Amino acid sequence: MEFQKNAFEAAKKWLLESGIQNLDEKSAGFYGSFADWLDLKDGKVHAAYPEITGYGISAMVFLDLCQRRAKLSDANGFANKDLQKRAMLAANWLFEYASTKTSRGIGILDKLPYEIKNSQKISYSFDTGMCLNGLTSFMEAGYKTHAKGIEEIANYLAGKVDSKGALNPYEPKSLNFPSKWSMQEGSYHSKVAIGIHHAGKLLGREDLVEISKRMANFSITKQEKDGRFITDETDKSTYTHAHCYSIEGLLYFYQKLGDGKYLDAAILGARHLQMAQFESGGISRKFKDGKFIQDEGSDILSQAIRIWRLCESFAKTGEFEKNAARGVERLTTHFQISELNPKNLQTAKNARKINGGFMYGYDDGKLVENVNCWAAMFALQALWLTDSKNANEFDMALLI
Image 1 (cartoon, rainbow, N blue to C red):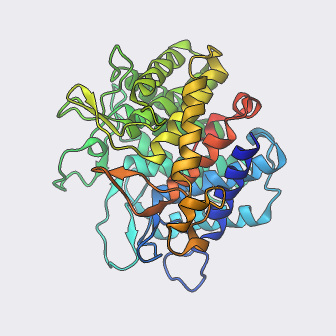
Image 2: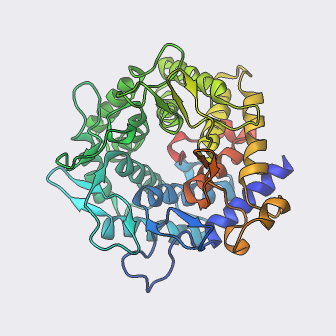
């Protein structure tokens, strides 16, 4: 447990000190945003990501509550003023630079490259939802500066949900995108439903609450009998990253509503992750044509660890304990670049900026040479939840 605590502190230090959040007041249009990753080849970041900035707001709220062992419902502001400032800067950036006004409300844009001007104004529903998740947590923590904007984002997303609970995945629909999981409606939008539900509760909007429940119920219809969520209808494959998003949303709804059907579906999904785990402890990125591919990612691994630990906290079956333990070992000894792992650190360039961070993972059998922002945020929570007390007390609204 001490090793995991040290790994958590190293990851926290990287997130706050690596420069992955832009804190340069002179950086016009990017001040407060979180970037995608640090490239090991040149030590640079290349794009400000609204989705990751939404995660970043959640991460700042989460870290503040961890520091003082407080619950979100009892937060009443931040104890750590640096974390508060970072969350506020991120929220301000989303509304000032990364949003688009529509007749239905406010949508959040795609990534904004540092070196490419006039990027297309594409709004992904999932990215918008992750921003809403962070903003609603920030609001419940005591900051209502953006309450009107939060309601407009919730309205925008709710207006894109059809009668069966499916969410329109992106706008404008006139763009001719290649078909992939993130361009399709699907079970992974249950994670978007978290923010809509949370906004509904905070704003006293029962209509938003009901729409979010419809979305969660739709997600269950995309699950196979063996627990696998279909994430690409074109080939019936499952991208494990999106499979995990599906489970995460359902665990939230179980915690908030107490309906066992959400936990049952989540546990079935968690069992699919058991099948996706390699001997090394890593998790396959994808299930296609009846088999798991060999590539793995640290972000997906952290998601699986969180899911297993949270399923244990709710169901207490003991069936996921060994999987989570093997996953944590793989995460900290293989993917984390840290002084805890000198051999790994010595192979990296610009060690000061990457120490404590997490390598993204493998693509086509090759290690992707970047230290990934969202992977670090997911890992922080995975490491925190290895403690049963933390898992038992965790508020699913804080899930990054």
